[in-house]
Length: 129
Image (cartoon, rainbow, N blue to C red; front, top):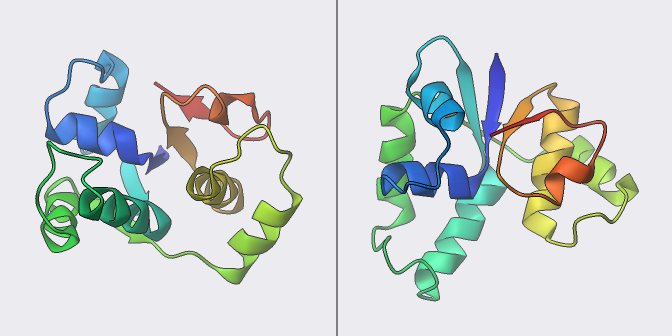
């Protein structure tokens, strides 16, 4: 399965947070799935780290990128097509970073690993948790 990992899923897994479901944990730690992480999510995490909103994560994005490599996660660039798709999405979700994730999942035929209830409102996106 090709899976796009939402930022909270990755951060919670790094921190061994009990909110990570057994299914999510098995996907993240299994070598049978192809995992992706949006460049937009890296940007979002960078902002949150810099603003002190992720107190448990004090490392820079460079270290997070190393963590992504350790988990065999490929960084997915944001494309012009992704932005066009965002423009036409319904407004179930207002967060611009999450809207990019939704567009990338649609455009790349990826299952989205997320616990975000608003993302689950999009019928054209398959989610797992």
